[in-house]
Amino acid sequence: MTTTHAPAPPIGKAAVGALGALAVATGALESVVTPTLPLLQRELDMSPAEGALLSIVLLVTGALITPIAGTLGDRYGGKRVVVRLMAVVCAGGLVSALAPNLPVLLLGQVLQGAMVGALPLSFILVRAHLPAGESKVAIGVVSGLFVGGAMAGTLAAGPVAEGLSRHWMFALPTFAVIGATVLVHRLMPHDPPRRTDGAGIDWPGLVLLSGTLVTLMLVLGLGADLVAQPLVLLGLVVLLAAFGTGWVAVERRAASPMVDLRMLTRPAVGKSCVLTFLICVGTSAATYLVPQLFAVPADAYGFGASATAIGFFLLPGALAASLAGPISGIGVRRLGSRAVVTAGVLLMAVGLLGLAAAHTEIWHLVVGKALVALANGLCVTAMVTRTATSVDLGDTGIATGLVLVTRVIGFAVGVQVTGAILTAGTPAGSKIPAESAFVAGFVLAAAVTALSLLVVRTMSKGVKE
Image 1 (tube, rainbow, N blue to C red):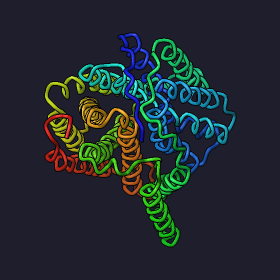
Image 2: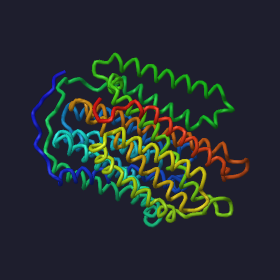
Image 3: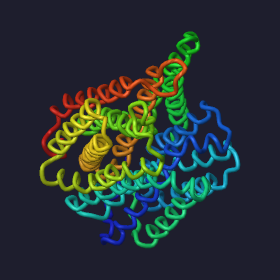
Image 4: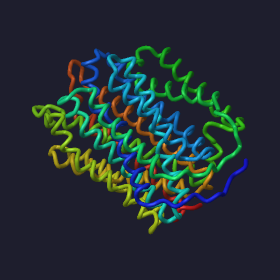
């Protein structure tokens, strides 16, 4: 493989700000479906199975596009690829905004899934144009703004959909993405390619990974419903194993694999992926369960909160998440990644166990959710920063793409498993899960989070290994 070493021109705060604006806008657009899924199901006459498909299609397509985007960014330059990628995202947002029915909306969500590849491309640009110390802080800022944008989208989606329409729920953040993309195009100088091997896209790997992720989501989402049909469930598990095994075999032999699994053998990258998966499984429990608890009727054990009230209660968590990225970037720079991740894991475990033990007052949930959001931002940003700065410059997109794919899979797995716990804990003839199901979900998430400490202990104190 041939690499180029031409230095990229330095950038100022305006260019970093443009990347931050793009992170906020894409984060907001990514998050609008989850809080409004019941509304979409009613307006589009969707079945529960169709609603589940809509809720995961963006995550699945995002996990597929991320490694491709990172590889192309390393090969052709981050700015060139990010602008083209955002053109696809903007098209998807407009399709979703104008969608008259579910098939068109699904198409829009598939196109929007390209946005997940924007983060590793942003990291390529930051590393190409900034010194090492400044790039660590900038990566933390961009990551934090993406999380903050996602939380803002979650908060605003319901009021916009109810006050205006579901069409504006997609249109407004799409307009923001268009504006931010124009800023990036105007303010960000071109960065030189770092790979010149000229290899094409690994289409067999893409197809097999697509089958693996789609089958995994089906097993997790339909597993409880298929217990009465063990042969169907067994067939899906066998299909999942076949897709996964075939994908690993193809990627190990491919000259230019879609996901370079050899990168996982590097301690910094492999450990970051394992930690990111465990932490995101834990985070997803609070993300899913806390709003559900707010919505449980007050005459049961909940609070009967409206969508507007729930958004207000989640605001401290949104603020904590948006601040976590910059704090983590500075912490990694001064203390090292292991210290930041250890603090984040302990904080998350405490928050989840606190939610399991005390959830009878609104402030219990507000504080617990804020602690988990802060901890997640600290950990994931530290993992991405650690990975991005521990590999060669030309491998930045591939390595961070692996971590971000792991983040998506961990979150999706956590939501599906936590939802299955609530479903199993709902008494026959009732629509309200037993309180013990929420407790079990929080405790399980805390246990998974605590397991990550076993990996943290093996990390070096600094960024590089």
